[in-house]
Image (cartoon, rainbow, N blue to C red; front, top):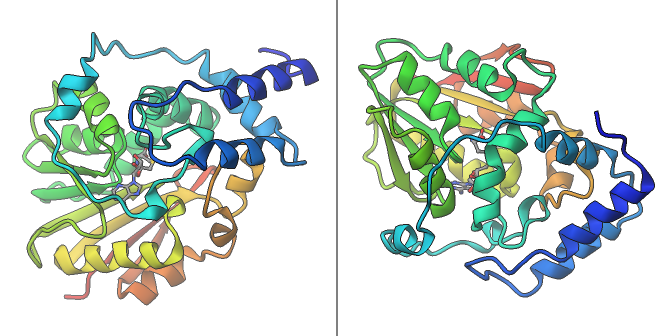
Length: 293
Ligand SMILES: C[S@@+](CC[C@H](N)C(=O)[O-])C[C@H]1O[C@@H](n2cnc3c(N)ncnc32)[C@H](O)[C@@H]1O
């Protein structure tokens, strides 16, 4: 275990303030937002624990990625302002190589004590919540697709579509999960999937809602209700209310709103019924809900 001293904190903060420009430069004010977060007079030990643990996670072999070539194959998406933020104090936020390449190690570090097999163990637990007869499943805000791949492996007769706004995440996810034949990717926004009404059996979303402002949380759940078949299942997992504040140093634009989120109310007011709590780990909450029949 690495000792966290004032000196190591200063070194990390200095490094985070001088990140190289990302391939897609999304907004000039991101640098100031990152510096303000890092300079805030709040303890940084939660952030430091994650950063130090990240170094000890095994890195999956992705081979060589030709970013320019792979990015060129994506259609342009009109990104809303709420998405163009330096999430987790990364320049470019989710629209950066660093976010995508560091995602697995970051989640393994965040969930290190949450399950004996860390984040991948949690993914497997989540996958067990899906009915084996489901054939058309979505994972919203899928990141690099670790949940989507776990669900696809558990239900090989299904097609699991990972809906993700960041091409960087999709590129890394595609390299990571090439061997999962029933995992597909859709580059787009969770609140506007362009899928037909009543066409999906089940939807997963993990760690998506805390990254969105309140009105977008509602739009995403409304979209889920629209595209799910009657009786269809939604599984939502996310950070505990105060958790984002315990990782100060990592820029989280919607952390104040997250303090007030009540998962049951959120799902109920969106129109879901039969809401159940699933206790997977002490580190996240998970709810299952159904579209009325
Ligand atoms: C914290 S990560 C979680 C990723 C993954 N679900 C996991 O559990 O590791 C949030 C992901 O949601 C994506 N995202 C955020 N807002 C989105 C939106 N409106 N539509 C689609 N993806 C979105 C981000 O690009 C990012 O990959």
